[in-house]
Length: 87
Image (cartoon, rainbow, N blue to C red; front, side, top):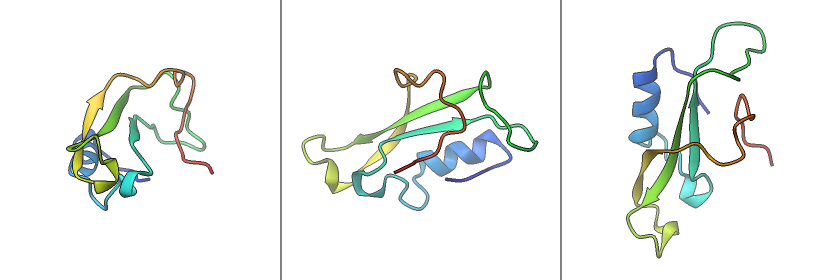
């Protein structure tokens, strides 16, 4: 969704939900990846930070109230690189 030159700004963007990144329940997982310069850089083996959107009211997730919290890696995503949403 975005690119920042430093981790602190990327984390602030996500944790402060700049631009409503959760999109009313459509996006509830996020990954910050360390990307090096280059043509088609690959992030495999680089550092990643995983986040989930934690709702204030889990019974009504579409209410949209909540915040992004760091979490464990998503199962099955160990070999996924250069995250993007397709579909």
